[in-house]
Length: 295
Image (cartoon, rainbow, N blue to C red; front, side, top):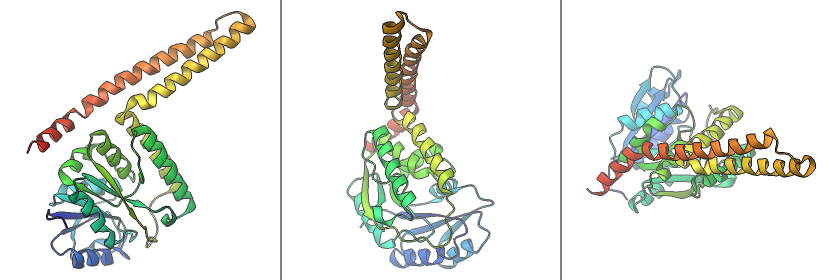
């Protein structure tokens, strides 16, 4: 068991039915660890129930989003290790030790990967599989659960990426890719997700589209050429095919073929520029890592 100080960070919005029990179990099992609940503008007894069971509560004056609550909790937490959990009762406190054991082994971020048969619905199960495969292709790393909110991370590393995290529900996506991009060690442990208590705040189609867009955005930030090179190659192939077709049938080079070739070159150059910008973007993080490693 880790000897570092650990902080549990739990974002919560209108979770009065489940938050008290979660805090009670955490305090009973880990009495020396900090339990920090970020009340994201709840209009029920979420804050009162959490505080009554022994949690330290930080409240937003209005709802800012799950990601914003994560950022607030990360800034306020005192622990060297941050363990993030949902407030809806899906995450089993018995699985926490699995995450901490991996941290003790030297990993910087450990994600609780939900077993396929424990997702809330068939839509989420297949959507998550799709996101995992797409993100794996974008990053070049195997990602077992891109959207899991049950994770442990070294606080000093996680806080470096707070400015990258969105205020909505997709902070796990961004933080996972940011850790991979910076060369930090990421591990996965298998967990069984429980049925949530209360009503979900995630809108499947709206937030599913957001996840997809964020994967593309962070993919471009992570390794731009993995995104721009295939697009450039596709444009070039289309232009070459169309040129061959028009040359054979009409013995001429058309404006459309020229447009495809020019677009291919421009896309490729944008990828190169984006790659350089990406490197500069992470320069401060890389330098900070070198300093940390030298301690």
